[in-house]
Image (cartoon, rainbow, N blue to C red; front, side, top):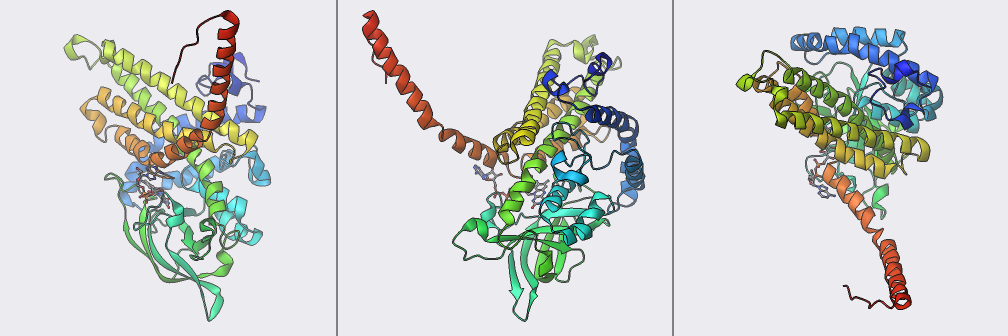
Length: 438
Ligand SMILES: Cc1cc2nc3c(=O)[nH]c(=O)nc-3n(C[C@H](O)[C@H](O)[C@H](O)COP(=O)(O)OP(=O)(O)OC[C@H]3O[C@@H](n4cnc5c(N)ncnc54)[C@H](O)[C@@H]3O)c2cc1C
């Protein structure tokens, strides 16, 4: 139970009462400590990290490495694995998880923890959990519509002379860039059985270690001009790349089970990070709105009615984004990821779009400086914008939600027919002339 003092603490104040009531003593302690950690260790470190990246783009900056060691000592590492993962988890639910861990690691770690055998876990998962290596998820292809993953065409075949070896051929877009020194594995989704009559059983997920003969990088993809170092986004060619069959995850033809298991949590993790980031953009706007050095027409920026309204709108949108994400996290905890798919889709549709709009308004209030490297606003906006496409475009999620909604029409029609019948009865009882409607 939160104390009166905790309820006004910035780490808890924005949580609705139904969430505050559900926090375990363990979660309360974690949230308090994570908040302190982010405020004192992470935010002040941002510019130093940028300076270190300028010296070596594709190496994890030394300050980040030091922070990882410190976070482990403080027991603040890998907080995202929910309770259902047993010993691997620090014991928090999705609802309680607050640490902003990075993509694609959170989704990949959940995938490996959920679907790998013991040997694979020892080899690939533990170094990731220890923060010693990093991983990439490789599904998207330049030559097909990858939002419908049944189109994925990169081919996996067995070497006829050595059936314990898989041979991979194809082109892939995205997945962190291989230049990153920490990157050790690619989790690759590819087509292993194109003739299978069930399109959901044609694909297999395998682990491709770096380096693998026949696997090569074409370039780092910039995202709206940003190189996104040190993780980056690579473009790759597989040319008769040879991978041990022991690296198949879960079994041949089971890639869709795995993709579904990965994308649910991965999607709301993006939303959680975006809320934290948008709160910071909003704080920058508040500081600028009350900056005594900035007085167009003799007034503070925050004294113009239009900006007062903007600030109110941004606050309300931020709080509504948080509610939607908390609801998705809670639904996943209570009913599982599959049943939570509507709430997850809802978050993935609403949050990136609202976050991009809010950050855009914050840049506007900040004036010319807001579009430069004087603030992190442009990079924040780029992240919000890219999440509208990464892990599935919002149009595809809307399509799925809309299709599911249309399926409810028949039951709704049944209810409305019932109203009409009752209306006729009431007309007869009360001697009211029945009106005709379409
Ligand atoms: C920054 C960034 C990071 C990424 N990281 C990764 C990664 O780590 N690994 C990885 O494999 N991929 C990654 N992706 C790729 C991303 O998952 C794909 O781009 C996405 O799934 C869409 O696939 P596509 O690009 O082939 O677009 P397409 O499938 O060709 O879709 C193009 C457009 O068509 C429209 N559309 C698609 N489906 C529907 C629908 N059902 N209803 C209405 N309109 C629709 C949408 O407007 C959509 O944007 C990343 C993307 C970005 C931008």
